[in-house]
Image 1 (cartoon, rainbow, N blue to C red):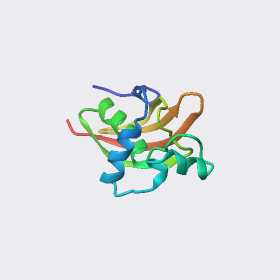
Image 2 (image 1 turned 90 degrees about the horizontal axis):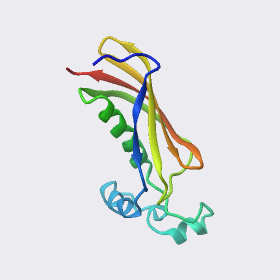
Image 3 (image 1 turned 30 degrees about the horizontal axis):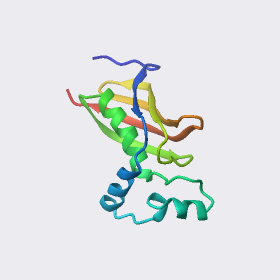
Length: 131
């Protein structure tokens, strides 16, 4: 398959960010921060009225989109920036664009958007094709 700068990548959609998954990730990440587990703590901190997704999950969503878009590739480098929180129950969509192609390396711009609030995470990544 060939890729070109400016090409849009297929989106990766999370119909509803799962608070139950946050509980599982809290164990996996050894991250007992109550903002991921207890809505009352989130409210008390003035951060909203829903539990907040862990940052590594948001990055994983972006990585999943890249791996689906490039099944014959591996993520060689990725830098991400957190812009806002992702809350339980929100619909989240990862989109991306090829920004450059250099042989077997493809640079991409990636963003995670939530309905009604826009971009909450952004990233750049280089994919190495391994075909």
